[in-house]
Image (cartoon, rainbow, N blue to C red):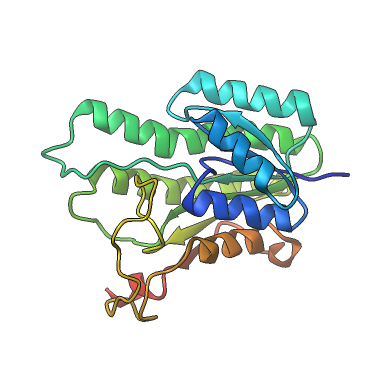
Length: 240
């Protein structure tokens, strides 16, 4: 039976790389984005042609519509990768309520809702795997207030959901990205030097690095890994 994987925010950078890796592992991948034409284009470009759905992950009703689509079209879901992210550079003093709510709703509430809805489908056919894409940093970050708070919440969500869902054979884990490719919020590559001596590995990562970690965690090779946060950051966080 064909296995189904849903990747949120999967039309560029890390999300696109994850969709490509999962397609290469034999999954039928559902590509998602606010921009339907982009999602359609990526889904058709995968090595194993997937499906697509246009969704704004800051909207509860849009997420509900997405999972209604999944249930009606596929009647199953084997993998969920929560990857969608939004960031606006601001300190706590500069963060207004609109920015706070949009960031938290997109980056954290969507992970909660998608995990909840996906797990309900997975319970019906024996289990599945959920991977949350977060950051490797366990510290505060200057001028990334709402984004950093949302990512800290994702780490706690991962561990709590892992405990709740393990009895249903649903494994929940997270991949913590360091400096990788294009920064969140940029659709095209910006001037971020590849070589970086602050990182023990000596350079920033590539979207493929994070995607391969996700591919491992959703595979049977990781069948005994539950509630883990796997850092993919070249050793950056432990060196701080």
